[in-house]
Image 1 (cartoon, rainbow, N blue to C red):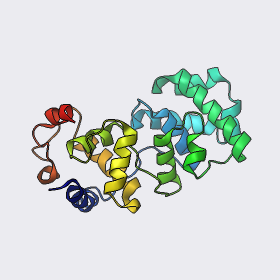
Image 2: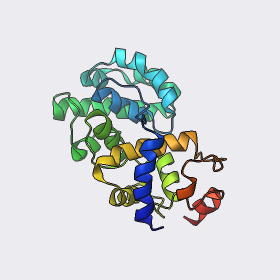
Image 3: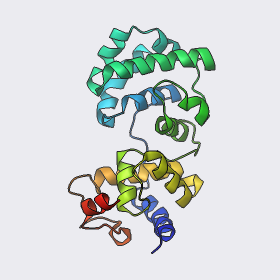
Length: 218
C-alpha cells in the first residue's frame, strides 16, 4: 500500500470511527477559542476548560485582556502551567486585536499568526473551528505521533508534518483530520501502551504492535 492509498483509506475510515469528533476546548466565540488555545500549550483540554469559565467572565472582550493586570491574569491561568508567559501573551494578543483589528479576531492565517501567542497551530485551530476555514492541519503531539505511526510522514517537525498531510488529504477534510487523529490518539493510539490489539485502524497501520520501534525509525 502506498502512502496515498493509505491516506485515502484513512479518509474513509476515520470519519466512520469518529463521526462526532470535534474540538474539545469549550468556547462560544472566536476570541474565547483563541485564548483557550493559547492556554492549551503543554496543558490538557480538561484543565483549560476548568480555568476558562471565570476567565471568560472576567474578560469578555479583547480590550479586557489588554487592560487586565498581569498579576491578576497570572492568578487566573496559573494552573495551566507556564502561566507568566501565557498571561503575557494573552495580554499582548488583546492589545494587538484592539490596535490592529478593532477588537475582532481576524480570519486570515497571516493576521492570526502575527498575534502574540498565536503561531500557525493556534491559528489553524481558530480558523478551522471558529470560522470553519480549512487553511491547514493542526499538528499537535497526537497528530505528529499518529502521522509517524500510520506511515503518513517520516518527519518530526510539525510544519513538515502538516505539509505532508495537506498533500495527502483533501482540503475539505483538513480541520476534521486533526480531530480524528487527536481523538484516536487519546482513545486508542496513546503515546505509551497503544491499544494495537483492539485498534480499528490496525489493518492500515504499518507499525501495529511495534509503534515505539517505528517512531524511532521515523
